Length: 245
Picture (cartoon, rainbow, N blue to C red):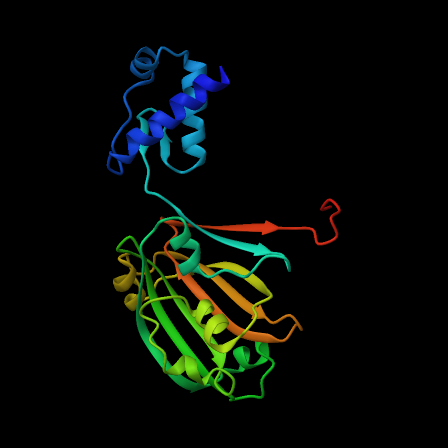
C-alpha cells in the first residue's frame, strides 16, 4: 500500500506541474478509478501534496492547484553556514532577481546603532532591494552595515548575486549566527505597488541581526515579504548532541 500511495503522489505531482494555479483536480471517485486505488490510498497521496503546499482543499468545492510557497529557512546552528535568500532559492532551481532601490551611506538610526553596538549616528551603508522569484515580486529587503568596515558594499552592484556571498568572497567575512524576530506589518503605498499587493495588506516582517564567530554584530536587516507566496521556517539544532527540551 505504501508503494502505491507514493506512486500516486509522484504521478500527481508531475501532473499538477503542467496545470495552472486554481485548476481543480478531478473528483476523488474519478481519480480512484483512474489509479485503481482506494479512497484511503488516494487521500493519503493528496494529503502529502497538500502538506507541501502544492494543493489546497476547499470545503464543499474540491481540491485545487495552489500558489507555490517559497520557504525562507533559517538554521540556528554554529555548525551550519548562514545562508542568504539568493543562494537558498537558486539551490532549489528558482530564478532569483534583484533590483536595487536604495544604496547609500546614512547616519545610523538610534535603534539600529544599538543593535549593531555602534555609537549614535555612526555611518551605515543602507541597501534596499526588491527580490523576485521566477519573475514575480517576492519581498523587499533592507540591510544596514557599518560603513567604516563595509564601505565596499556602497559601491558594488547588487542587482545580481548575493550580498552574503560578496561579504564572504570579497571581504573575507565569516557569518556565524543570526538572531531573528518575526512580526506582521502592513504594506505602504510604495511597497504595495512594488510587491503587487493591495495597500495596507499584511506583510510578513523578518528582522535579522547577523554575528561573527566572536559574537560581534556584523549587520542588521529586515525583509517585508508577501505572505501569500512565502512562509518562514526555523530549524533548531542542539549543539551538545542532546535532545532539545
